[in-house]
Amino acid sequence: MARLFITTREMDLISDLTKEVIKDVIGQRIFYHPVRTDVTAVHDVYDESTEKVFDPPIELDALVDWSPGETRTNKFGSEKFHSIEARVHTRDLTDKNLRMKIGDFMSYGSIFFEITQVESISKIFGQVEHVTGYKIAGKQAREGLINRSTIGPAAQTLDTEVVTQETFVQQRGATENELGPTADRRELQADGKLDAPLTGPKKVAPDSTSSSFYGDE
Image (cartoon, rainbow, N blue to C red; front, side):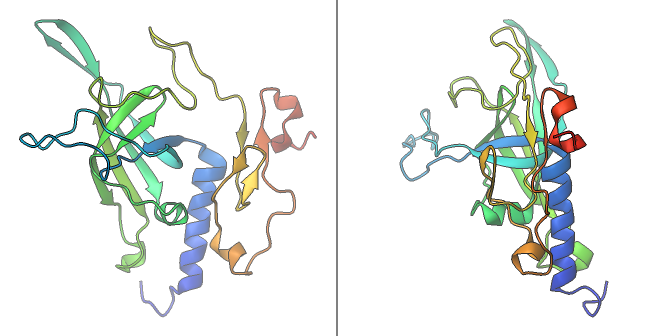
């Protein structure tokens, strides 16, 4: 597409629309656990670290492609291994001042994954400086690599009870909603091209009859 017709305003519109779908409709999220390479001890011979030091987890809205898992059998019995792919918004990473790296970790539900791939998805209208987002691939982390508690909703396992997310609150470009700071930015609102939504972020609560999403307040 010619640059004559695709300007900064069109790029901002595309960014805001995709953010609206991911943040205000889909509602999936992962938690990113960056490794502190500056303070993590590395083995002199094997160039690996047995005890990693992590920064606090960062919540990221994402489109998650969940795999049911692969069952492997060895002399000790059967084990199930999971893999995951998540797509995150480019400008959301910029808003959070985050650069994702291979070797860091992420969690989805009660499972932790080591990131094995980070790649851009595509260029917007062929313009090399504008990336639609990033695809992050991860494999289930070996036990002991990361020891952290489950954050967010999680399926029931033999070790944990089901953890249900009962309330979903939109962000809609607000600096914070009733759940706290959002670090969300909508370009057209920030540039004064569009007004913020008059009704603010809506939510879906356990009792749908009183949910603000349905206008039953």
